Length: 298
Image 1: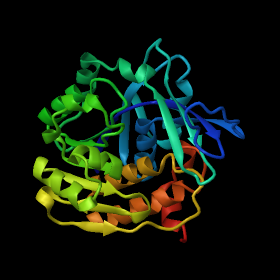
Image 2: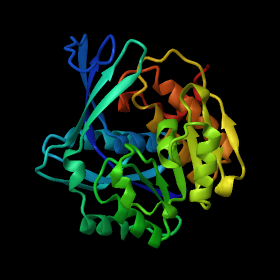
Image 3: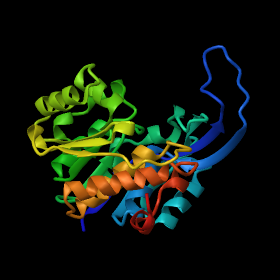
Image 4: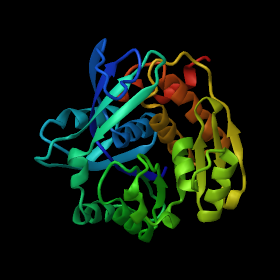
């Protein structure tokens, strides 16, 4: 089994239940508030571990972030590469409406304290054949990609949130992109049509594999250079909170691929896991275990 390093974010999620997303100038009363462990990095590490992968998380937490490390340990995620800082832990303010859709405001906090010496220290413990999973919620991303590629790691990137920080990243060193339709349109230059997105990415990064998630329309896998396409439909459930759906999909897909499973199996397993996740509230609490995914009847 391949070793997986997730160099990613830790966040504390403050989740507010609302009738609809707040609009400019509006004051809206929330019906409830919950506090959950989260962050795309943490979510994906937990999903990887619950899917059965051997995963270590690297990142930074502030003084109030120790409970996030407990969550990792309880899920089987290694935390020997996590460091503490006096900067507050990253956090999000999340609105979840009556349809289960969400809107997220992100504060980077300690996630922005990652520097090159720390990245080099961690990456020195990994090498050829290992996987590294990355998102865009931390600092030093471009350097991490460069060093990971140089050391022969399989570089997996979820380019979220998509912003100008990604301009410094050498995307040609990415082995596998996992992105949603909005991020795909941003990377491809504007068109949201899946065929246009996949065609553009194949032309820009011909050696990379791509998984494009399309919400209720499922997902599409594309092999290097536009080859070997597979379409995966969704499993229909009653959604209550979509916060961790994408991270659950990413974790399960990478866990399956890194274990040598065929793409079709990896896509189906990821789709099942993400469908289960949206039937529960919160990010980390909603991510199912491998046994739950195998036993769930749709």
